Image (cartoon, rainbow, N blue to C red; front, side):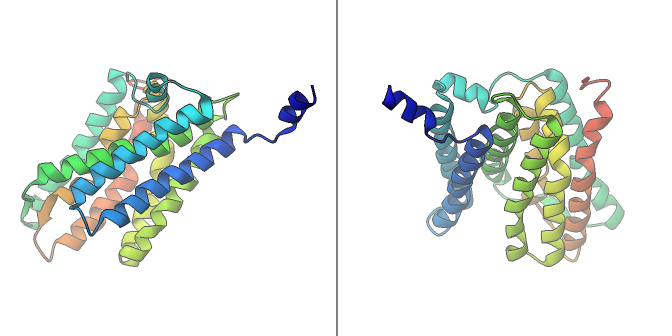
Length: 257
């Protein structure tokens, strides 16, 4: 009897606490893994290994925190079925991003071509920026805050995910000029609510947001001749600030509430 009473009195982490703790652990795997492997493996192999490690850790946390089986954990992490409407929205907006390159080349005369082994770079981006980051920030953080227990209101859950996503992007200020770091962080802030909405309307599936997240990195797969690279990068970053909001243009058609 006393033992049962003692167990009841033990403090337990709330859903928010579990989500924040898990997010911290998973992000440390992502960031620490990339830094630790940078001098040992090429970029894509590092991304594949780190993404696999983080996803494995996420499955273990699903079991530890919420007692889920591997199959149920995959569903909770956004690996379930999606809706064709959400995928279509993601593909339409990705096409707008893709059209930037021929448009910029036509307007400026800049030479733009795919990098050698661009497909290998795409594989790494899909694994890390697409699947791993969307699993962490959209499914693990926003998805769990939204659905576990009584569930948070959309605005509150999306705001917490926004703050976390923006915070981890502050590292851009260390690695890049101020304007690049500022715009990169601003992209993370402005994209948080639209992507959370798309994620929820897709049936809490990461696949539509994976498509958009990878599309946002398309500029990494091309070579742009100087002196056009920096202007192209700045215009590209500005484009990324605006495009996610077009998700809301489909609220009454492809993404009904």
